[in-house]
Amino acid sequence: MIADTLAKFLEFITVHYVLSGAFLVLVVLLILQQARNSGRNLSSRELTAMVNRDEAFIIDIRPKKEFATGHIVGSVNISNDQLKTRMAELEKHKDKTIIVVCASGINAGAACSELKKAGFTVARLSGGITGWRSENLPVVK
Image (cartoon, rainbow, N blue to C red):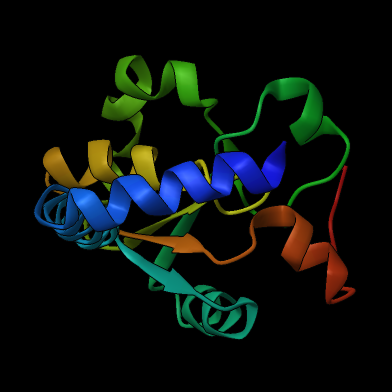
């Protein structure tokens, strides 16, 4: 069954190589555009250095319940669904880089895009809070 499906897929690609190539180019361009609009990825070390130099402000976009289980010291919880309505709270931090933290680093991109549109300098924690914890870095409850 899987071999048959794979054979049909490969046949489609070879018969429609122009269409398949155009699709591949569009996917790559979409990925590059999204990466450019969603801020740069920061390692845990880079985040710590920026916070220590008072160059960053951390927002955690996870739901309040997840935030309560443990978060980075000094981070503020503004859940993803509240970001647009609470963006005015971040105006006083416009001179700093807003670092967005989510559970795994995947959902932070959309929040970064919104913040970037509003004129903020943004970055996201690579690996999110899961990556932070995997490096045995401290969290507070």
